[in-house]
Length: 268
Image (cartoon, rainbow, N blue to C red):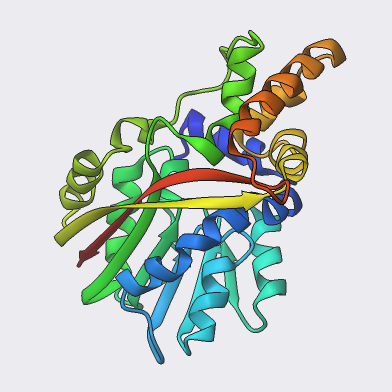
């Protein structure tokens, strides 16, 4: 059954696929390779890319010769993934619904999806069902609270004095955004050999492009809040944003925004 958070997420992401593909998908691409390594994905591996978004992980898995299926809760995301990865079986489904038979996959990979579901434990249990015995799970999530690339828009809102709206529900996953808690969550769903590691990198991007795609593009809750502001308030937020990202400017004018994620691997 969908939670209030799940309903909010569906409204949040509706129509956002183009902006996400131009912005955050390029940030998350950094960890797609390590994610597939953790899942043991290679030639002939039957892999499910859950929360595929625009198909970044699916494309990389297909490039390794894997047999790839994908799912996403947003129809436009699934459509975009199918366009980007020719022949991809991309289905629309909202976790914990996983529209595949028991034991269908050698591996399940999810890149920054577990933090977008209303019941993370139920989602993990559902993903375990579609893994074969000894199949491998690999998931990423953001460290909470977010830093750098994940946080600059929220930090600008705070600096500009914009209050956080009461109608935006907190993510149920927030309490699991650190290594030990993430590991306990995965283990509680029945997985074994659970390991969680930190992954840190820097995302080089034009600061105006990041503002355009992630703030004005309405991506995530930060983008939703930005989109609600009047012109004077929006100008204050943008000025705060410019001041924050100036700390990360490179000689070429781009900024190197730090990113910090967790990568969990486990066995069914």
